[in-house]
Length: 379
Ligand SMILES: *Cc1c(COP(=O)(O)O)cnc(C)c1O
Image 1 (cartoon, protein in one colour):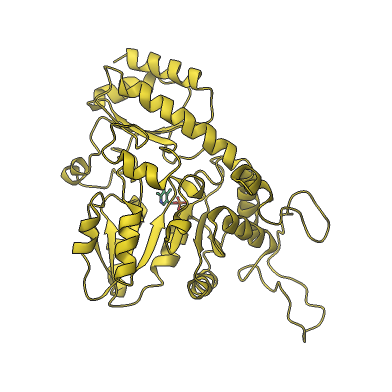
Image 2 (cartoon, rainbow, N blue to C red):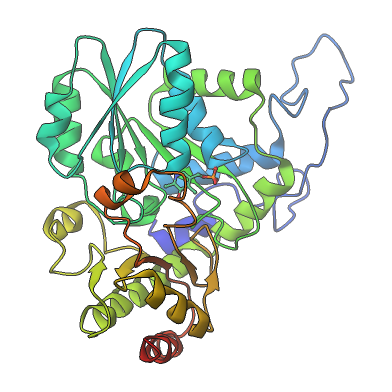
């Protein structure tokens, strides 16, 4: 089954009791047990819920994984994976990492005796050099947010296998449709489904997929014990969003490539960050592990004054945090996602005062380019 078919039919898409064309929203906390001697599939919705289970099957299908668990947010999914480690364990993670994950790794994990070393992930050798006796896992995000730095997945997975380490990949930016990380050998694929999987900026939800039965059991146990499960309605909405995901991802990534090429030749744009551009330093590595450059383009307008002029003039995209909607969304990392990072550290990470991140939506590219053209002419 190819991907456009798979997002619609790659999992049970109708209700087995009624034949309903969409899996119903089972909005219930508990389930009537007609006979206490029998074992029932459904007992209590923190343990399992038919709507959430249906989404979980759909996630397995698009991830090419045997097992998945869906959580109340991307951060809940990341927490569940990271809380699977124990006191004394060590993790090597990419330096350019999602802000919430950074906070979890620096403010929470150390309290449980789990330590993390952050490395520049653009060179796989840095992962190798950071391995200690108690290292248990590599944590990866590629391309990174918001400067779209690329990690060589094959190289890092190879290193992990050689050293008996677990690999965890937050694949929110590429999604399993553009980068099939489970098939590449990643042990845990995490997605903030808030972004491209749901794709309509109306749900917060997270997913983890794996082929390891033992880890899968642990993940389920963790979701039940901590209670960070996805709600039935959010699961239902995400399944609805998922059905159009292949079309959205195709359109958005085509738009993003054109938008990046346009920005790359514009005299008012200082720098463009997009792994789909041949000029990106890791373009070739990225294209070996992904179908295209993805849906997110970052660009530098030089300074804050230009950013303000540009944002005042731009009409179509939402100016907001988050990404992955059917609509284009522009964020200003300096005051949004990276506001809590000290200035020197922020600049060192390439998050300059002129940097904007553009999550490219499914609008007509001619409209997006005309809007950009007009906004850039005010600089
Ligand atoms: C948004 C995001 C998260 C967090 O997901 P939530 O659903 O907001 O909890 C984690 N990683 C990446 C790369 C993200 O973009």
